[in-house]
Image 1 (cartoon, one colour):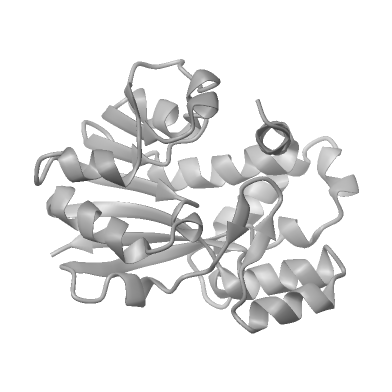
Image 2: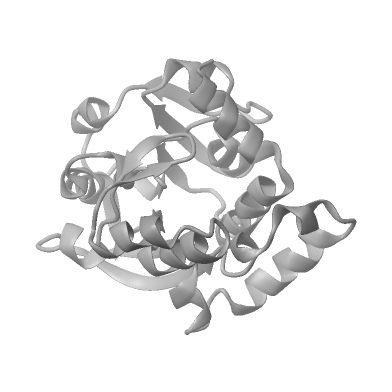
Length: 236
């Protein structure tokens, strides 16, 4: 595994990495008996969680991540990217998962077009995206790097800790002209990304912080300052 992937895996195993998934799981735990596509499935953490009660197909381009994926429950794993999407039949899925993926592609709208085609009527997309306001706050407060934050304000690409160059996109721009609309959205990493990591290994920290994050994740202005946002898109 490359150094970047090793760093990413270590991040996922840290208390703050696990907490992010616990928050996402709370948004998805009601899904049962659905046909689900997880695009950009990474180490399979979300695909595996959903596979306990749903029929899941996961697509991931990186063979190293596929080799290390979580497999407590049975799901179909495919290797590929946009090419695979384009070969799948129309209206194949009830739900499409796409979490922290579209920041790393050159044209997010291409992927949303395929998702829209693949969704059944009234189907939903669970989209997790970087949120520029929260990212700027994190960079200034947690990283103490105002100069880097100024680059975000100017709309420049930025380096993530493990996945390389990323660029924030706007949901309304990438769904323009598609039969998709925002149904609701939640904030992820509202508070805990601003804390020193020294606090995050204390007994009970994760449980208390999960409760706090979920208490306000649906409320503005809290969800509007989060480092990430979870957006439900519905096909009309």
